[in-house]
Image (cartoon, rainbow, N blue to C red; front, side, top):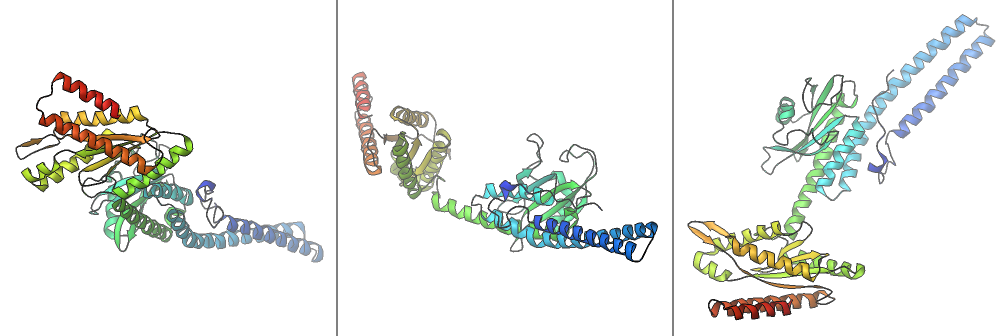
Length: 429
């Protein structure tokens, strides 16, 4: 009898699992022990009949073969049923515990498809997630796909009939796959596809699509797939809500930059780590010039759009690992790890020049440009604690603002004034 498809679960995925590895390992071990005991008992029974009852060798052989076949069929059938029930009870709990131990939503999605592929013995797995409106599904994680052969992210055109049926009926749909579909494995043999809706509080939040050979036992067990879908859906939905709440707690609502509290937490950590590993940290404090004039002249709606656009500019002009935050009404900050004084000053100048060259707001017949005043400080050249570094950055920002006001009030600058301003800027830096 063919053994059900049950590949060994990768140990690195279950290193913290209370099951200590493959949850069915103990079942298969017990099955081997019972089979050995049954065969030993059959052999002893046949030998006793042969020697005690004086059976001939033909009767003995037939008895041995018949007893072995009956025992094998009974053991395989009983353990096949037991393994099926064991999977239905254990696999959803295992998925929930493994994913629940992961705090990051994106990482949990990647982990879920790898776990499902290992537990169910599938060739390919696709996890699609619904947007906030719930009417579109986008691929967020895959397993078994080459990097150049991923399914279309949205909508799920690669399995549309099964997807529609699974979404509309809110139940597992298993069907044969059409030959020649680009998202199928490029190998011989027929395939089947299972579409598993992911539900949370009776809401459809995603879809799990599994591709396997038609003889795969896991894809024929709809009760198992339904339980796995519920476990994944509930766990990922909770993680997504937690992730959204965390983002709300650390983001400024208007600019979508980090807020003041998160920025100072990162500044404390950055300066502490820089002191331990003798690495520099750069800090730019920048203030928007004449934001009050923009609000008074054009209204707070325009002022808010200016700040939101400025937030996007700052996010796009700095490095990915820099921390950009709004720390006041018109005051922003950029934290740059592994950046010395020269690099921080260069970044501040690039931001100033970029904003001077391009309008920050265009609409309703308006084209507004923006100027900023930057103060640059950092560790270790400005101080060795956060308070001292912030005081230095604030002081230099106010000096820059004062120089700008003096330049504007004096009219067009002469060559001597420009040279003096440049010397003052170099001295403050």
